[in-house]
Length: 169
Image 1 (cartoon, rainbow, N blue to C red):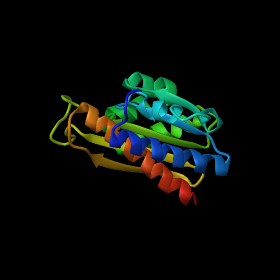
Image 2 (tube, rainbow, N blue to C red; image 1 turned 90 degrees about the vertical axis):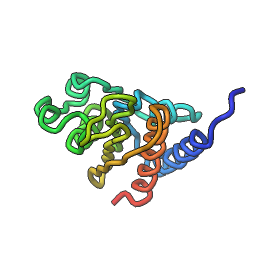
Image 3 (cartoon, helix red, strand yellow; image 1 turned 135 degrees about the vertical axis):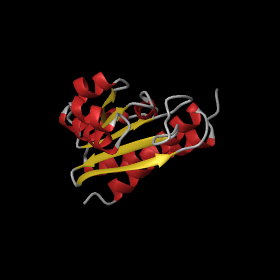
Image 4 (cartoon, rainbow, N blue to C red; image 1 turned 120 degrees about the vertical axis):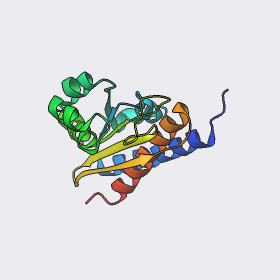
């Protein structure tokens, strides 16, 4: 049996906390992922019983997928870029609108090793969270290789989700 890294264990523990809180509120979660390619949803489905609180996951790696599956306006992407606050917020809101969930999280970023710019270096990730209490967003810059950036993105998205679910209003 393969052992989990400390970061994977932390993500798993955070996911278990999020699951407990989702169940407490009787809410469902939808994920909208770009740079993580479904790793957040995979972390959630690693937990037995996740069908009780995980409604669906969208992997919207391309700009067209963000528009077609989540309703993110192409003009918004053209104006701000896929890795931006407005797009992360629109992804989270779109995940709610295109699902039966009450809570959504989104991630869009540059995992590397290429694709960065001076304004948006490799490791830049925008996050969005939508709950019945509103929509939140933030940016983080993670160090490391592609795998490290993606793992840190999963962990951060779940940590902030837990914090939001603990104080949903």
